[in-house]
Length: 593
View 1 (cartoon, rainbow, N blue to C red):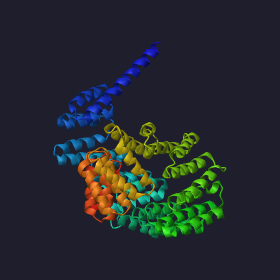
View 2 (tube, rainbow, N blue to C red):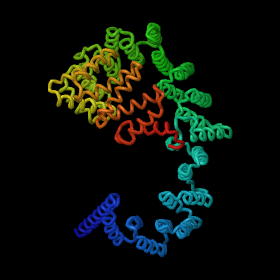
View 3 (tube, rainbow, N blue to C red):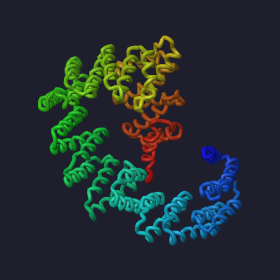
View 4 (spheres, helix red, strand yellow):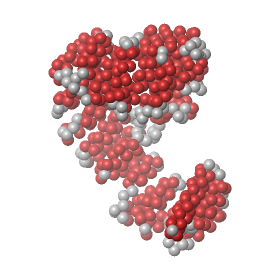
């Protein structure tokens, strides 16, 4: 019983100690240094050998400009039999804060000399020097330790510091040497390279990395360097050059077409269709399985659709039929059949045929996920044909069939969206409330946006007149009936001016004008949204779409830069923040991100 009581006291004491530590840190982070000082003094008194609390006490004293008190504690620790050399750095930094630079250098030198005696301190001392932005000293620590003890490798730390110093050539060389020894660093190193590489091939970082990789390839023709060159060219959106590297990798390894398949998808997503087409044709020619060849043909047809005018649709229809005849109508080709019926319904104006074929396909020997995807496409077509009730039945079946899959969440969102098109806003809102907590960020965001629009416009207008009109315009846009959608939206902007729906209508008008390549008109709607609703939830959407418009269609980079800058300064929580920062820096011409 007595031992249990002692254990309870120990646990209680540890808990109190930990709480004090957290409280002191919170005070320090909030700038309440006097309160933090009191707690850290108690913690150090309770455990004088705890280096972490001693360092925190010193930092707090420095914030309060109690430099003499900090110096006393540091020198006291340096008198111990077992010296922790970090305190030489702390002493030097304490002098530096007082503009005593010559004394600071002497203290730093003592820490550096300590490495010659005990190289094992290099990691911790290098970290502290880096924390205080003493990069030259940090480099000396790591390089000295590696010279004295060949078993130690601080290449990752050195490469990072070289980058911070602007020594890009040395940084790339160090990272590439590290990668050769340990290829598992590939992902981490690419992530670090992203700080110095942009889409601009003339950027200094891009040029130096390309030069370093070509030099390595001449010295050692390892496909590792081909892979990094391919990655660099992809960042620069130079897919032809990346294709050359991927072909070299495939020729050397002849193991897998995965690199080429990934490149084809990237080029397609970036709408570099001609480059993508060339890559896909290579994949088809070198496919080692019918499935890979089929996937290649599917992607090729998708590309052909993007490049073709409606006059070519009969030819594309025949190509789909030829492929289905060649590869069959079983489960193995269900994705091809979905693509074909999507084409029939949304491009070739044969919705009835598409619906009939998808119903037949859904009854074949498919697994539950395949069947769910077929029914999803079937329901989407029914919605576009305004057969809402039948579509809702299929969406509900998907939810029941694949309950734990993201497809079920997507189907639930489409139930909400279909109810919204029907004007059944209450049921739509019920579904959307569930989806706000979706594990899919994209579905969750879409659900919150639609939910907010419905609730805002329901509160303001109990008859929901404007909201019903907007839902109808949304449906027309889904049906690719852009002009009809624009007419409805113009009616909203005229007859519901100043109502909550106006900002939604302005954004949608801009998007539809972009789709119709009426870029100046799109600009005017985005500008009007920003003028009247810059404090509202859609303002960042307008700034971002306007920036893309200026950058990609209207060739006005200075205006694009300004719009990206607005997101950085005024919309830190925007989903566009990261991409806006990247594009802003590229347009500004940063050499180092």
